[in-house]
Structures are given as structure tokens and as C-alpha cells.
Image (cartoon, rainbow, N blue to C red; front, side, top):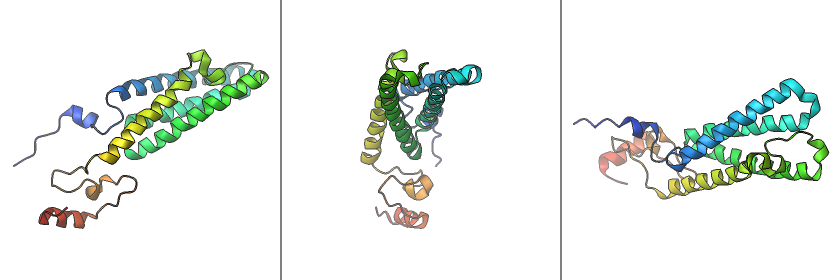
Length: 186
């Protein structure tokens, strides 16, 4: 008997992906900030780099962080989620450090960056966005740890069939998984 084909929606956004539900909005906002920060930094670096090189390079760095966060949140795999946690954490540290630096030494920032003044030029979204991103990723980390192991259509645990293992888990080899499936053991 053949298995029914998966719907395109299920393939596009599996239920264990960060790109479902509110994650879509989070990814969209990250994409918007990636575009805004990168474009702004590109224009500033190309036209008036000598005016505020530190500010413009920090804006370019912020754009790169936003791009990385957007891509890894959109991919949503366990490895991508780990990279997304790193990028959101870097973003939060950057907003706090640059925000404090820009207030303590305004002379270094004759022109604003995305993160200067804790993102005040962008309605403080740069300060809130990494917090929301980290909370969203934390939710998925907890969900991944609490759900039972996924099974393939052949009854083989997904980890053994090449699906990888979660942090701290030990996967079975393909042969072990086939033996388990054949014997009915768990």
C-alpha cells in the first residue's frame, strides 16, 4: 500500500519549524531590517564614509547580523536555530553596547546607526527584536526536546534514517534502527 503524498504546505513549513505562526512575522521584520540596515550602510559607505566610518561600519555589521538571523530563522532546522540564537544574541549585545557607547561618546557617532541610542531612530525595534527572536527560539528548543522522536514512513526513527540528532541525544545507526523496526523493539 502506498503512502499518501504530503501536502505542499506541510513540506514548505513543517510543524517543527520556526517559520510557522508568529515566526513568519518575526522573519518578515528581520528581513525588513536586513534590507534597511544593509541598504542604508551601503549608501553611507559609498557616498560619505569619511564622515562617520565607525557608525557606517557598525550599520553594515548590523545589516549582516539581520541577514544571518533572517536566513537561519527561515531555514528553521536545529542547526539553523543554533546559529539564529547566536545571531540574535550578537544583535542584543550589539544594541546594548552601541546604544550605550553612542550615548556615552556622541562624538564617535556624528551620524546614527541602526543600534545607536538603543535603536531609538527605529522606534526601539532593534532593542526589542532580538529579545523576541530569542524567546521564539527558546520556545522551539523546548518543543524539540519535549516531543517524541519522529518516525519515517518505514517506521525507522528519523535520527537513524539520517535526520540527525538533537543536542544530547544519541542516535542509532541505520542498521540498528532497521533491526529495531523489524523486531518491534524501541
